[in-house]
Image (cartoon, rainbow, N blue to C red; front, side):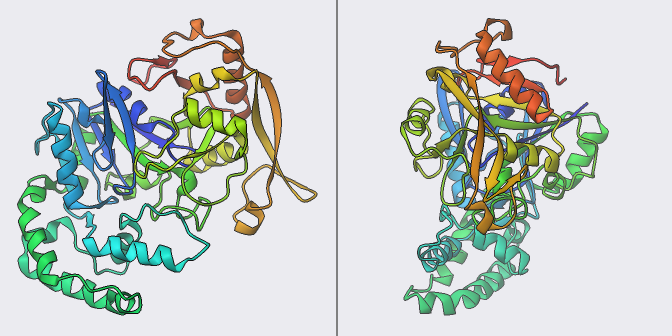
Length: 428
């Protein structure tokens, strides 16, 4: 029995989906514990590319249990469509395989409209939201007017809460010259989809604690990256939930059980989608090569990802905040293009050196990264499955990163394919 946590240690898009999918072969349960369908996990299995938003990454394995925890905000219409797409590829999603927390919050159509209005009101200081209603849904949750999965079983509560939500947002809609959505249409659509969602709804907290007592291996799957955490990320250019490891317990209801393997997924370079500070960003040919070779386009938005060198200052900070004891290094093959590779080891702000990312957004914008350079290997390593087969300079880079972060690199990914993975530690 193990409790395994997997979070991305950068700004997302680190390859968490592949790592979860790979390790889920020997795991019993995988739990999504935060975020919504603004997450995007791309997995290549059996030469088929799957793009997941809400469904946990082990949904591709037929004999596993997938859980969407209470910390997730769920667009019920998107979820049903995502299930349909999975089933079109020959997989089946049943209430025995997919479990949804009955106390999870729902995203409504109005949340998407409010998301767009809020982003437009920010003018030049846009956050870069996906405009999928994630933030407004979380806002309604903490303001105690949200509709939850369990509410779908009571038509009176649905009508009551839809009325309250529409009344609350009416002034903003009017001020933005937006027509109010039809209460009748929203209520009708929720009633129609309710049986499909309720089929998967259960007390997740109770089931997870029972799984834990029965010695099942439970894996937590983070969405987005920890640098987008609402408290510890580059605020205000962050997502609307806590993305760090400790949120896995609050977002699922599992009692605070020691995590056996606390894995941080790290891309061999750094990317970011949307706005906000990015100390090692490369707006030059090197950045363009990383984007092209790494196919760096957002799974959810399709937007180009901003690219830069790996940032060990930021990574060290998040390793400490999340209590990471193991690293999965992904997209190492993308670096095969370069004669030399830079590693950011400290920040300069004016005359001061920083070994951490300051919380002030003013200071974050002034950061000048300081690099050390290591030699590249200029040979294709795509598809390598054994550590011994890696070029010596690739091994040296891995060891250098591991030493500077004082954390073992136990997984190395050399292509998007499930099987192209080097495992240096037995997690089971």
